[in-house]
Length: 348
Image (spheres, rainbow, N blue to C red):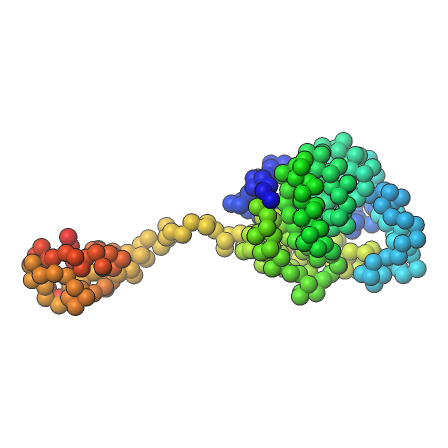
């Protein structure tokens, strides 16, 4: 299944040679307070993230009233409160989304948000977002994926809680209308254990799908995301908060501001380590190459007209002069055009 391998998100180009695109996931860690949401944007800017992402939902359109909380939500919030009541307090209005988008523009960071229902999707469409993030909760929601795809914006598709066959169906549904997709490996608990990250799934995605890949990281601390970069991901996402002790479902599994800074710095450092896929000497290696790589010299006296052989030539460091031993076998077919003393550099 082929998708576009070059995608434009705002002023950013994501392709196989680009720097890793970093999404700072604010999620619902604003607690419904727009001033805290702006503080989260400030933190994402200071850290150097490329985008800050929130979540958009109408609770009535998202969930039935009596649905129990997910296990991790029961551990981080009141067990007596329903998931509906918890989410209702975390909604962001359309007017607030507009305000946050404007604030992000002032701060020169991309504003992204995840729509969780069709009404929120249509409202966000009015904001002309640069891309949509689809949460793992909707990987199997094929009618919703079709509606998002038809909006014509690049899509980050998260795949937590999903079977491979479900990911295939999701991609087939989207591809009919949209080929600008980044597929994100994800394990959807908050947080996950190290052995639940399953970065090796990225290898399965690479074999099955010709497309850009990413990793939505729910591991503890700086976590697994930097290790996903050498596996080929071009997008990473990580939750962050102002204070891990705040009340709410995701704070404990999020990075604090200082950790987000460290996270971004490490991702960029790994990008630097990755460098180019073209194997050639660095500029800084060229002089070292002259000094340390070897050339062919006479291992004993060689008379003019005598054939070069494994018995009379050998490789030694010559300061960059002479013939590389790469050509040793070819030289065996040649005869000396002059006399050589031991350690004389071979010439043709």
